[in-house]
Amino acid sequence: MRANVLLKQGVLEVQERPVPTPADDEVLLRVASVGVCGSDVHYYKHGRIGDFVVDSPLVLGHEVSGTVVAVGRDVPESRIGERVAVDPQRPCRRCRQCKSGRMNLCPQMRFYATPPVDGTFSDYVTAPADQAFAVPEAMSFDTAALLEPLSVGLWAAHKAQVSPGDQVLVAGAGPIGAMVAQAVRARGATDVVVTDFVDSRRERITSFGATRALHPVADAEEIAALRADAFIDCSGATPAVLSGIRSTRSGGTVVLVGMGADEMPIPVSLVASREISVTGVFRYVDTWPRGIELVSSGAVHLDDMVTARYPLEQVEDALNADSDPLSMKAVVVVSES
Image (cartoon, rainbow, N blue to C red):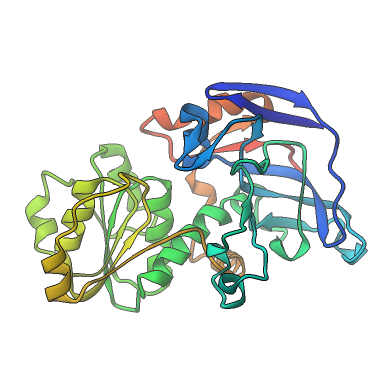
């Protein structure tokens, strides 16, 4: 099979590799679509994310959909032919975090495209059978792949405890900001205010859940006057985080999604005096069934977020697509079925 491999920082190569064999509890997928994530771009451009370093060849890509073409011994053969979307997490299922329902925090987690685990920019991949979720025939493979970033949005909305009628402030109108905006609207938020410096992103975010789009500087007074029930940062920018905390009501919740500086100053006295809860997001737990339901019902729209599609041979172009301010989501199309 073909695999597009990151050999080292900034260097990709299409290689021929053996088709993997599914373990007893796994399925083998013929890959259809793979969304390009910011983490893929970061590994490509910088060769590392925190402690995870690309020190040997690595296949990127973890937002994946495809068709089951073979199954392991413990998986029913009736699953062959299923169109699926894959939760890319492989927790140990035995540790305290896993057994208490926090498998996203498993210290032994194996995750597609996180060194040393290969990702999905290839013709075939294996996946745990219970992490490959059947999707309706009416759902495109592109949308099925984007259930992964939608899951980040759904988990952020869950951590923010968004309720019907809430006002939610979101920093960042990129792909994850758009996923968060749609997710909080699906939970009943009625006023979703999204901030971003880029004009084109502010203009289109109202098509993806936002009720208002504001400029962080030009509209600073309006942002400061908010008393949002929840603030969700998808930018990673220290000024955005500080502004968002100050715009959160007493008793509200701040959720940090964007990856920015390892450390930043937090207005502790304000957080304490307003009893603001500050938490983070690291992946997700059991979000695929909910995501499939929301897309199928029309409450969330993902196909419209795809602004560019590339073949497997052009993964490098897909990874550079984010340099275009008009780009929202690039997808690598490995096969059409």
